[in-house]
Length: 386
Ligand SMILES: Cc1cc2nc3c(=O)[nH]c(=O)nc-3n(C[C@H](O)[C@H](O)[C@H](O)COP(=O)(O)OP(=O)(O)OC[C@H]3O[C@@H](n4cnc5c(N)ncnc54)[C@H](O)[C@@H]3O)c2cc1C
Image 1: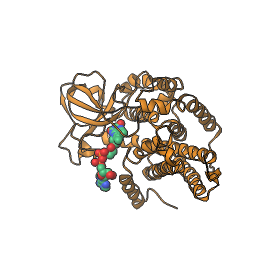
Image 2: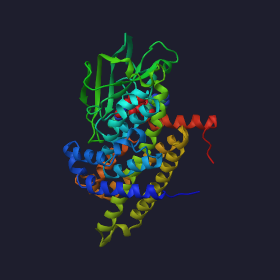
Image 3: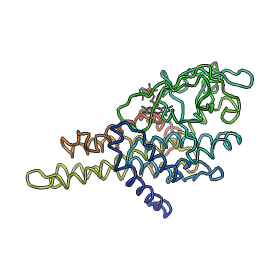
Image 4: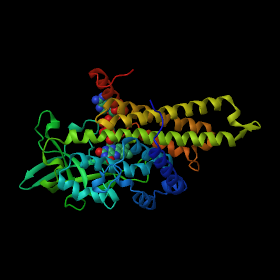
């Protein structure tokens, strides 16, 4: 049994680390607080080919193995988690198109998505349905060679740059069970009736926008139905979300690693009662726990990433997403405590880690829902603990 990255993965991680340390770490705090869009960082990620990490090589992508995919999100989130958001739903949607799209859809979109010339996201959540995706209300009614789409989407990350945006709709709102009437349509930006109406104000996850979208009689050609067959939308989305959970687990490791790094450095530099606070046992307990938890989370994230190499692994990805996101939040809180009053200051990094960490327990399935997913996987015997 091996617990180490292979040589290619180590080199890739070192390259990512260098990019993050040079291009993201120095500007993250200022740009995040200014609400500035990180255009230069996006350009750098384009140059590195990172918009193509889930695009097959034949369409110009890097087609990374899932562990290398996790490394991208770990390293970028160590610098600034919001940046990982720009790549996150883009990569998930690219994977959805690559796995389930028609040949025409793949050749039309994937080459430009791989370079970042086109960008994308994923439109699932609605004002009245998030966890319960079968409860969405957006409908797509067939009218000749077009669907007419009506509804609203909520919290859509990258909405202002997505072209096309894969949108989950009901092509048969009367179907029972509901998922049999659900499909994904690739809606191009600029299609009449498709409007990004609002950037939702948020606690953290700045740098990337999360928006409301209105769909008002949007006419979408039938050729934009992912896979060309109705009723497969939920299955298509769920298979892509599996990599999404690896992505969130890895982002959580990145946040936790940064919390650890900041706490360790501060504890050695800050003095109280004539000595570095790292000499006090109360601080040592926090540092020891932080290091232990971060390393455990990292192993779990890589393990789950490795598990999806051979297909669906709901149990492993669910476990990793739950564990790593909880570690990230606790690590951020502990790092703030090590910093004392300065931990609460926006002039230090750790308060951002805290604001960003909370999202990790919500996105790609809330942790409570994933606990039920893990339980089902244990009961069915698909996942075996031991
Ligand atoms: C910053 C941000 C970015 C996002 N980006 C995107 C995006 O790009 N695309 C997209 O489609 N969505 C996106 N989302 C939406 C996100 O995926 C949803 O918020 C998430 O799935 C939860 O859905 P909800 O908010 O509707 O909560 P709800 O589903 O209303 O859940 C509320 C609470 O009820 C609990 N709950 C619900 N059902 C059950 C149950 N059966 N058993 C036990 N507990 C239950 C949940 O765990 C949660 O605690 C984003 C959200 C945020 C905050």
